[in-house]
Amino acid sequence: MKRIATWSFYGIGALAIIYLALYAYAAVTGRGVLPGDPIHIFRQPDGVDVTLATPERGGDHAPAVAR
Image (cartoon, rainbow, N blue to C red; front, side, top):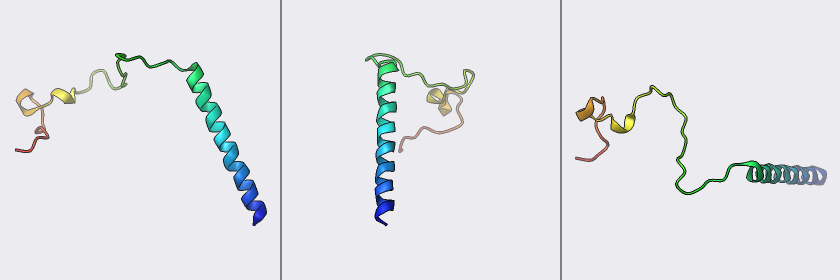
């Protein structure tokens, strides 16, 4: 039982080191985020604009406002 605990401790430690190494790699090679940069969310270009889809504008759902 003691041997299993030792190997699991080593395994968890190795996973933690791998995670930290990948985080450091991403931090060093990644592009920094600057204030004011737009957030790029990839979706279909011809998709429905759900932010403007209200019944007044031809949408098929009611706004989420309590009346």
